[in-house]
Amino acid sequence: MTSRRTRDRLIARLREQGVEDDRVLTVLRDTPRHIFIDEALSHRAYEDSSLPIGFNQTISQPYIVARMTELLLEDGPREHVLEVGTGSGYQTAILAQLVDQVYTVERIRPLQEKARKRIQQLRLRNVIFRHTDGGMGWPDKAPFDGILVTAAPEHVPQELLDQLAVGGVMVLPVGDGEGQVLMRIRRTAEDEFQREELEAVRFVPLLAGTVR
Image (cartoon, rainbow, N blue to C red; front, top):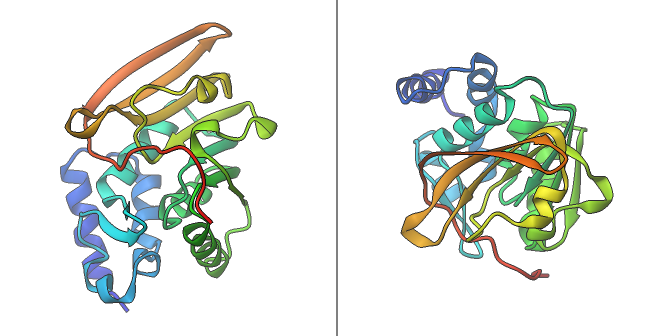
């Protein structure tokens, strides 16, 4: 079992990097990141680094999870949030403790099934899973007042813009390879979007198709 001191050191580092939302930091401190990675890497669970989870995918570093969550919630609470890319389920678990309902989509079924078990282990009951191509989102459940994307498309998918409610916020990495940037997009009217480019990031690419 990882010590509270180890987790507190991580949170202190996130504060030093500019994460300010106490709600987000508290949830990150209290969520057991070690259950979302393979046992062989569990000793690195509370480092501020991304780690492999199989299928050429990674669990994001705690800083980027905290930063993206903070950006999503900065304008106020979110009720109906779409996560594109369940991955290990770690970001899913953070969101589920801060918003009313999380709809999460994953294209790689074995990752999704592991994530589902971890979410159940944490007794989080406000997460709905779907195995599908992430770029398509979840149109049947739209509109969402929050969308968070955990893999990088080369361009912002129109399908996801269409699923964002007026007044809603989408946070996502955009770009190819070394040229990715973290963006926040607010839908200010039916046909109006406000876009901010925030900082350089590096994510796995958002790919089409599903894996069983």
